[in-house]
Every structure is written in C-alpha cells, then in structure tokens.
Amino acid sequence: MSGSRPRRKSAPYDGGLRLPQATGTGDVPSDGQRSADIQAERPSQRTPTLAGPGVQGTLRARGLAGGLRLFVRPALDRMPPTESSLNRLRALTSGAGRAAALESTNDWSSDGPVPGLWVGRKRFFDSDKVIYHIHGGGFTFGSPWSHKALASRMAAETGTPVFLPDYRLAPEHPYPAAVDDTVAGWKWLIDSGFPAENIVVSGDSAGGNLALQLITHLEQSGEPMPAGVVLLSPWVDLDFSDMSARDKAKKDPFLALGMAELCRVQYAPEISADDPRISPINYTPSADWPPFLIQCGGAENFAGGIAAMAENFAAHGVTHEFQLWPDQFHVFQVFHPLVPEAKLALRDIGSFVRGCLHG
Picture 1 (tube, rainbow, N blue to C red):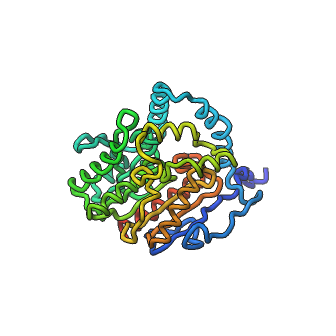
Picture 2: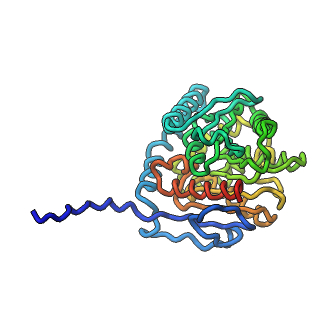
Picture 3: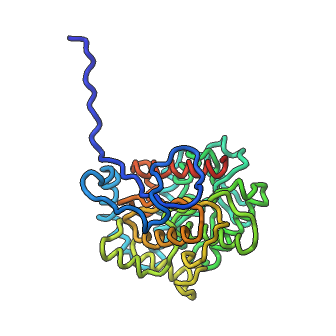
C-alpha cells in the first residue's frame, strides 16, 4: 500500500445555474448579494435571452420541468371540471405541503377574524417582525398547509416568522371573499401589535393577486404600507389572450389553461377579466407603493402579464426588482429541495426581506 488517500469521485456534472434576467427601478432593499445585477429599468430594455448547451440550467431543473410537462400537465389537462376533482386537488396540495416541512415549528391560530398558520423556528416567534404570506391555488384550492414548506424556507432565509391566512376559497366563497379575508388578516396583524413597517407582504400565484389587492386597498384608504412586497409568479391578468398564445407556442410545464379558466370562472363569474378588482395589472401603480421583488419563470404562461406589470411599475416610478428566471416554471421556488435555481431565488428573497425589515 502506498499510503495515499483514495481519489474521491467527483459529483456528476449538473449543468450551470441559469441566473435571472433582472430589471428594476429605484433603490431596492437588500441585505446580502443578489444572484444577478439589474440590467435595465424595464423588461423591454434588457438584453436578449441566450440559448445553447451552455445556458440550459441545471440538470435537476431541466429534468423536473420535463417530468412536469410529460406527466403532471397531461393529468391536469384531463382532469374534469367537477367538485370531486377540486377536492382531490385540495387534499393533494395540503398533504404535500405538510409532508415537506415536518422539521419546522408551526402554530395554528384562530385568534383573529381569519384563522391561519404561523411557520418558523421557535426562536422566531418572539420577533416583532413578520412575513404575511398569501398562498396561491387559483382562488379555489391551496391552504396554509399546502404552502407550509415554502413558508418554512422563507422563515429560515429571513429569520422571521411567516403567517399564512386561511382565506375563504371559491366556488363556495367567490369574489370578494378572498380579498376581504386578506385585508382582515392584515388588520389583525396590525391590531396584534405588528407595525406596518415591520411587515413584509408576500404572495404566490393567486396569492400574488391578493397581495396587490391589499396594497391598492391600503393606498385607497390612506393606511400605512408594509415594508415591502414579494410576488412569486403572481397571477395579475385574468384575461387569457396572452396565456393562450404562449401555451400554443410551447406548453407550460405545469399550468393547465383549462384548469386556470375554471378557477377564474369560479372565482369571479360576474366580473369582466379586465376589471382591476380581479386583474390588478389594470390598476395604475404609484411611486408611493412599497418596494417590490417580483420573480417568475421564463417558461410559465403568466410571464407575459408579469413582465407587462413590471413595465408599468417602471413607467410609474415604483421601486422594484423583476427577476425573470429562464426556463423555470410556475412558482418554481416551491421545489427548492430539488432545484438549485429555486434555492438561489429564495436566497434573493431573504436578502430583500432582511433589507426591508432591517435596512
């Protein structure tokens, strides 16, 4: 024996991380380095997206997107628009969220007008700061439990507890029940002793829509604004023209248009898709709004509407950073245990939230 150490096998090559294309305006809060520098003020000014084997992203990200497109999307496309299908979705999403975050502390609260779930480590619960996260699910499914794993990671990245309101869902409770509950949950946090400047509002998908509805409500009522807002793949435009065109060009790995259309009808059957009460992209934003961090996947059908909102933010002087993550899918951050890009996106969220609350 030579006494030399055995050579370690190198890890298999997983491709290169595809960093986001970032645009934005104003002094966006941060505490720690972001994954990418801001290229321009608005999406229409950024450099073209490169393509080729060197910029395909990690193998895990591509593999998961391919699996979703091959297995999950067809199953959702075939799902009949029935009450039993909706119940299955509700049970599946809640169960997956519970199982993925067993290591985190949680506390169900029924103290306020809207019950909800506190998520984070025990040491976070004495904090005077909080993230108010509004879960997605097309206004018809999803729950605090379905988003517990995402909230747990956000709490770990920011050192701040997360409160998820259990707002009422359609079709049992159509518009404006979800908006009313979102506003009521915010007011309960304020009444519980959390100053507005110690709260960051966040929301994913339909929850991002509701987060924007909350901001417009606070603006119109003259109430204090939160320290910042995080939007993950927000569903801001309930008109399907752009989404249908994108899906025909290349199928979204995850979002099924038929299911999204059903959710829209069940949520607000009597309201035009152009009405800002359900499509906040049609509100006129204000430079007095708090700073925003907006993330979306380049492969998702919502990307066009989100980019248009970022253009509007830039035009009206809203402090914001818009990150378009190439080849990623809808709310890819949920898959942070698997996808390296999702972990990096959540680190950027942590930097933004810490900058808002401690800057």
